[in-house]
View 1 (cartoon, rainbow, N blue to C red):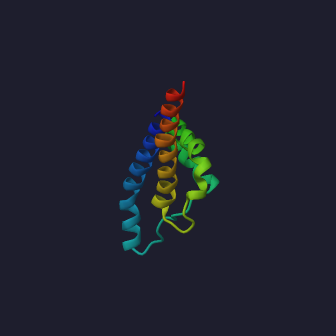
View 2: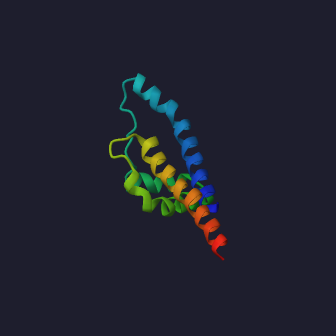
View 3: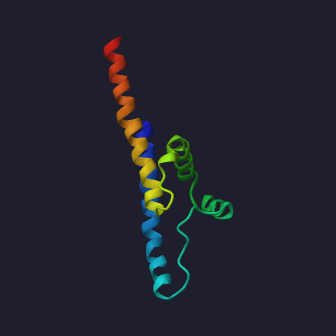
Length: 111
């Protein structure tokens, strides 16, 4: 339950970041300026993002990175940021939310 809550909180924070920057990207595209990249940030951009976010936010993002790492195989290669973030999240929620709770109920029934 805690793992699922951390994953959902991280995705919520990601969605808030994306929607807050969507307006600027749209304005840039309309004005003919180069739109922001949709690929993962470079190490320099990641460090700047870490400075911009609060310490609790970085802890949530780090926990998310650890929990999602085993499911990186589910990440679509050519998808946008939402798909690259959402698909592994769904797989992780199935495993952590459904799979582990099923194992807990199964183990309790066997005891």
